[in-house]
Image (tube, rainbow, N blue to C red; front, side, top):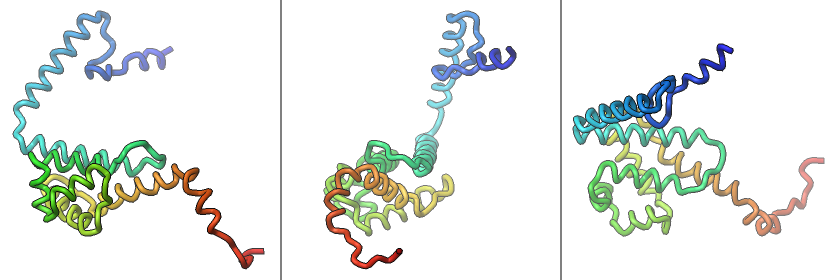
Length: 178
C-alpha cells in the first residue's frame, strides 16, 4: 500500500506543483504563483542569457535526437538549423552573410529544396564552434551526425519504395559462400 501512496505524490506536469493537494483551488493558486514567479525571473534575464539558454537547449535536443534509433517524421536537420539561426540572428540573411553564402541558397536548404553542400557544412561547423565556445562544449561533428542520421533513418524507413527497383540491379554471379 505504501507504493501506491508514493505514486500518487508525483508532481503535476502542468504546473510543476506537488499533486498532494486536497483542494483543486489551492493547487491552481499555487501553480499560478509558481508560474508568475518563473515569468518574473525569466523577464530579468538578459538577451544574451536567453540566447545562451536556447542554444544549450538546442544542443541537448540534437544530442537526444541522435540517441533515437527509430525513424521519426520531420526534417530534423533543417528544423535544428532554423532554430539555431533564428536564435542567434534577427534576420536569416545575416547568418548567410556571416558564412558567406547567398540568402537564396540558405533559403533553399532551409526549405528542403536543396541539399547542403560540403562547404556549407564546414562553415556551419566552424560557426557553431565559435558560437558555443563560451556556452558549453559542442562536438564538431554534431551537425554532420544530425544530417546523416536523418538520411540513414529516411533510407531505412523507405525501403519499400527503393528496394524493388534496386533489387533488379543486384546479382551475385559467383557464389562467394557455399
